[in-house]
Length: 80
Length: 131
Image (cartoon, rainbow over all chains, first blue to last red; front, side):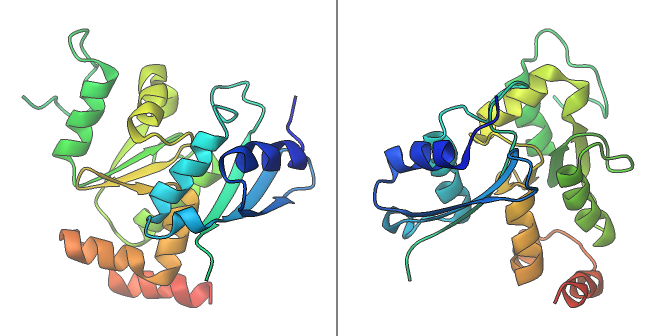
């Protein structure tokens, strides 16, 4: 069962309640998503550390061959 | 002890030991779906294509050929997706990060800092084509 944009955003928001989160359906198929997450906690972290934190927030939704979240292109940054 | 190129993993060596060994004994390692000659996923293909084009000498590890490595590298890197690029034992990132670093010139700088040979003119060519 693929995930909807609001499901993805809700999972990320559990960990990053104050983040600016933008979810985009890349292919229009409800299966290939892009997420931009802008959060103050990213300050001082490199991209790998920032994106690891977002993947952790998704709690295994991307793990395994039957993962509900098939593809997610992540962009992360700290607010300007 | 160094495992010979393409050696079958012995029972004594766990997937994590294998990963430690591979990233410790090769300067640049790409965990990917398929091989550098025949990638089997668009994301893997993009990163392998950049490294091929830039003339980087790297070891490609096909995670589709080994389920233990496929899961093991995700656990090891704390990163849920393939491809994954390692340089001098350090995790650099997946497809999005490597693409971004290629276009910004950060990948060149990383290779220069780590003493990895690559064709700078080819890197510039990629940037010119995507400007």
